[in-house]
Length: 346
Ligand code: GTP
Image (cartoon, rainbow, N blue to C red):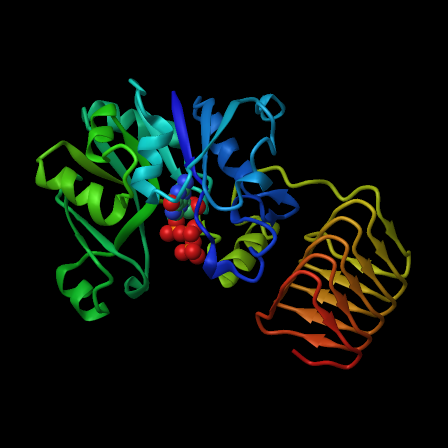
């Protein structure tokens, strides 16, 4: 079976992290993000995967070669100009005669996709949309289904009282199972959105279209700084099952330093005496000097954290320099190459 991973968006909400690193390859616990998605697809037997690109394609094209190192067949396709989520699907799956799994390239989940595909086939659906339940409905477009799971309508970001009145709390989880008939709803070469154009049209035409609610499954997007940090911490804390995290090897950790059992340290890091690393991710070649503290944070490669600095609940980009006794806390997001002078507080 074929899959298309939509990975061509600009990732504006994740700036400044996505200025030099496009969202599909931002490191999540030291692995380029899309590897988690490729693993979920492979486990479900979907091993013919097209990565659909538009923004900064040169940084991703050929990133994993033909995919053999990940146990799949990978190809890359780049739009001349952004075609939107639906247009990108048409461009990547044009001429495809089989069922296709389409995945938004910023969803982290441990979903059992084979169960979704099985239900899609049993229902003889033309399209199945995965749905997830959320508490705060105001940030999302809601999807209403009937008791049999057939999708009735989409409601764009209704007020909480409106959502409560109609009893809907399911939102688009960003994974679609589509039969080739859906291709014709996205005219060749034209910009189309799944959410606002193609899916409403599937309903209008009365095609068999079902929602599949994913329950007892981890689901999050990594599209904002807060959700990106949370996804890293959820992986460290074991809130997502089934992914092997990279081992802590090849770094120089002083005996008088503390690295707790949850943290993940890539190779070539240097952690000096008295430093403390708790529930955090350090990318390759990070230097943490004497008595610096890193807690509930993600540090990208080749950053230097000087003596006595404190980084808490924050993300620090690549090749930054955090000065002595500087304090970075409270969800701060520092872009690549940020230089903080000694004693700065962010
Ligand atoms: P923001 O700019 O922060 O909204 O992020 P985004 O650009 O990724 O947009 P959004 O989250 O709405 O996109 C959902 C998924 O579709 C993401 O994985 C995007 O990479 C992808 N995507 C969005 N637009 C396009 C497009 O025009 N072409 C392709 N190939 N993918 C797209």
